[in-house]
Image 1: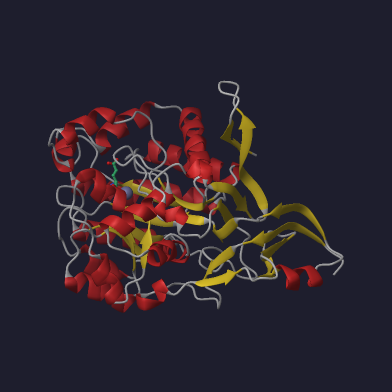
Image 2 (image 1 turned 120 degrees about the vertical axis):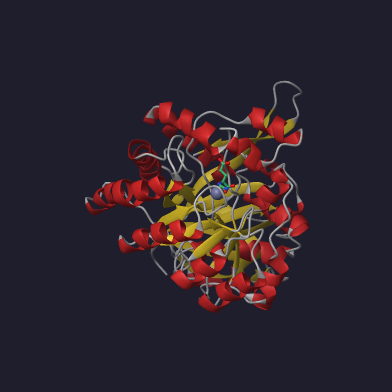
Length: 449
Ligand SMILES: N=CN[C@@H](CCC(=O)O)C(=O)O
Ligand SMILES: [Zn+2]
């Protein structure tokens, strides 16, 4: 075959496709049965990514070599000793903010609850004050640094929320920052308008609901119509003391009317019935769900609403974890997100998968399905991302290990495990070995391309 392609990966021990027959989401026992191609005695496994960044072939080296004999590749990676997985998908983040909350971490370690901190003017409203004051440039620079760290941890698609503005100027500023990063950075972004992340100081929840629906959302819609912003989802923090179920429903319905997918925070600290409401409304996804009821799980299963669970929150706040085993048993598709925000300062999906296994009692196959195909489905992107199949994006993570499970087993130190992150056939992160001048030994060093 005489043609030019973007990437050839060959010699891999294992390629974990996750799904191999076009499945767009995994539920129940299927979350444990992942598609893999394993090296044989005659050689490893190859992947070819074409000049459009789409996977053209996956197969044993011998088969691929014979098919692509006359082809040229912009880049070739010898993946001997490596396992290849799909680029990871982070289904829930709040990555645009200024001012950290390390002081609140200390308060929480001393016994304060999340809502006690919030009601005392801290929490989200602390971040809102700092984010309103920050320049667009400052927010853009810190967002890009955070996205780079995600890329280094294997993420190739991430959901990014606004929500630390709570007024039209700052919500639009955040969405513009996300849009700029979406255009500039080599990572895919699903953008979420979250003007109803908290009730701004000095307003009631009813006033804030009206402001989101009558002022913020129309302004977002105008910028979407003029092509200045791409926004995919709408989010609300539905919680006792924040937005109630009826207010949440109004905001999500208004978002749906301008083409945004409902993907919201529900049943985190209190059981309000938002899972039932979200399922009835046709929400694509609901996040958190620590307090979801059996009826809520059943409603989500009936409507195909995806549960985006966030183990970092349960970990950092000492919450009862969401009932993931009951969700999987009921055929609710479970996805994972890092929930990166100033309360849960984690951008690493490998660590999130580890926490999902230990705290949420998921097995490693389920955690990987949740951090790939199901997280992609929670963002409406499972047609292009979340698995390694011919025609899908060539978004890959290559780890140097005997088996793919090391990505989850290892708690941190992933800079020594993840050798490459690849986006649409282009290497966007490569771990390099160099000689340390301190001890003249070989140490791992990372670089971004
Ligand atoms: N619970 C609401 N939103 C975030 C926390 C945001 C914050 O504390 O700044 C979450 O998903 O955990
Ligand atoms: Zn959140």
